[in-house]
Length: 168
Length: 321
Picture 1: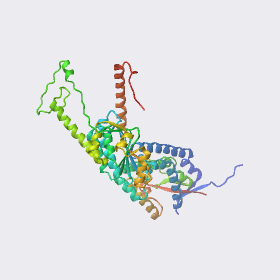
Picture 2: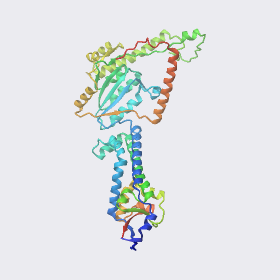
Picture 3: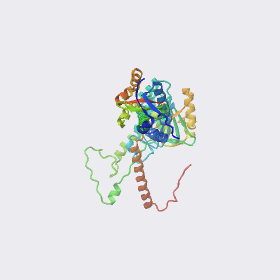
């Protein structure tokens, strides 16, 4: 017997801030555990014994090679972190954290519009610890806090946004 | 909150590629492997100077002591004073490092290079300890004597305070083959030490005088470093080597032992729990490849040479311990 029930519908709206933060926290835990942990050995080797930032700074100042080693390791760690988001979100518009929080990425110029690789790169560029890109670590959250759609500056620049889907 | 569009779930599923856990897991595993490989490579090539973080630096002085890196092209068993001084200065400027142990296994080498290293050791503001292993003789001992404390094994070979200079003279050889050494010089001693003619008595005297001056300087330095009378060191400076135990009784060594004794001295003096960190010269990938290729070529050549020149290799006297 075929029942003629009303079709299930999905509404798309801006993602709630707490959901976005939770999704990022989940993704960051994954990245930190699986991708950043091999690099931790390098950081600990060079700066692990120091108890304060000033001591780390002094050690780096007295041995410039240590500074360049830490910078190289941080660059590669950041690059792989960025790849995590690009590789997964490019294919499925969601990272693991976003999937669990039921969020996805769309083009801010229209949900139907394709998001290019470069747009994905720009929205995740903040992972690269190079001046002036790392300023986004401060600017992005500020934009998010004071923007009515909770968009990061990187999202505005990449013309993408995170949306939430509601099934009714 | 603004809802911009509403559509059926079927339409949604069609437009958006379904989340595939297998792909996400694959990406994470792939990136994890990449992170392991990259961090491993960085570990090896980016920080040869520091094996682990610690408060006692260990600097190895192994093989012949030379003044420049170029001398070590065919061998790992050389220590360049340029590199060693750089490591001493690095350890000296690191506030984490409280003491430096020099792990010495060297029969000596260039007097200039040995003196340079000894001076750098005396300049550093850290506690310095020499740990003589198999051999710490001649230039190797010069360096050891410049540290605050010398530890050597009972069976180590040390001492050998003296200077040697030698070269091969080919004048009879070229005479035999009717070859003429045409000598065109401006300045009486310009070709002093030329292997193609016999050294004159006067020239030998000049060389001997220089060797004696270097020996005198060597004796002076050892006497100052070890706080001994110059006349006492003079008596020992016959070029004779001493075993560790004998060197201790002569005052050339402070303690018989090894790494543990060196660490105990540092821990007592500095009031710390010693954690060793190895200071080594940075080796680039290119250096490793060059050394590997040049060594291979060297050993191939040596093997061919040996097979051509040696007919009986079993009657050689070899002393090992």
